[in-house]
Image (tube, rainbow, N blue to C red; front, side):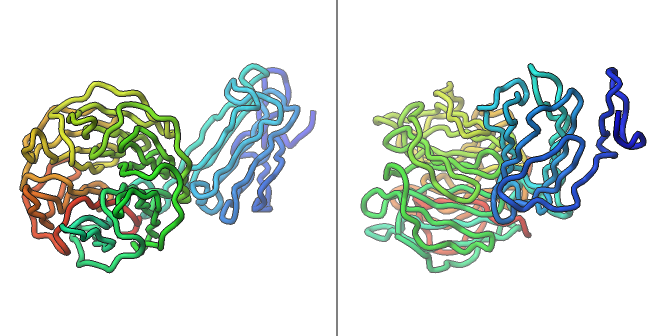
Length: 421
């Protein structure tokens, strides 16, 4: 028997195992792309410059323990992947990919036996002081259509109080009916849309609200909608087909996934439950729909589920609180509406609630202020475009019309960005 007794506890077998408080922490911060770790030790993993694959011991003993910690709060940008080195992890064999990609996370694992292998005792994420890692503070509305041939590339920033700023001359290809969502906790992506013909180009927005130039597109050119999922990633879904395109936490758009659900356009998507998403409503094959498709926290889009509320298209959606959402406005049977449908933190869409404010379609919405939402712009009927805004409280209540800012338009999109008020 060896080891420092004061730093260990006796197992039933009489072997000595380190407790979390008595772990021998490595003094060297790991910055490489790979590291092989030892039982009974703790490691600070710094993924600022690159992702890191952590190889676990090849011949662990029951009770062996290892702790890993996010040294620079960058695991969300560059994840830590565990290589269980021929052993099981939570009962899954070594072919199973184990990634940890949450800001401020620490991982405490213990080897149980050959059946279950390594088991997490805890995988907690510690919030940075003064920062809510799951909520954006600001928003951006961009692009759209002002009538005639006026597809736009302008943008309007939203501050943490829900005030929309004046027009900013846009960057990139002018277009309408694109999709937009937050990614990477504090940034946004606008992609796809109609620039005179459908396109698949994308434009990233940094955490200061500056829209970047065009990025060569990936996937089928079309007019999908988008939502955040997984806490730091996004998914584009739908349009003339039901294809999804996942977006990484660094803003990279993946190729087309397998189509799921009814092909439709002019629907909307929103985050719920903190790390999942739901797409609902829209139009398809001349019909107005209220079907919904849930998206898991790994980006898997589910088959159609029975919808709730008035079937319609041309609506929008925003998250509120920290884990709920709301669909609102749109058009049904040729008539615009101002009703809303709240989404619970389990993805259940509630019945219609009479809305507040001007009835309209083809507007946009996003979250702001950490736990609130904003709906703005749109077409009130017959091509009458507005820049009206309606704020939504952190309990899902939509306020009356407020004066908007910027060019009145429709068919634009919006997303949250920044964790700084």
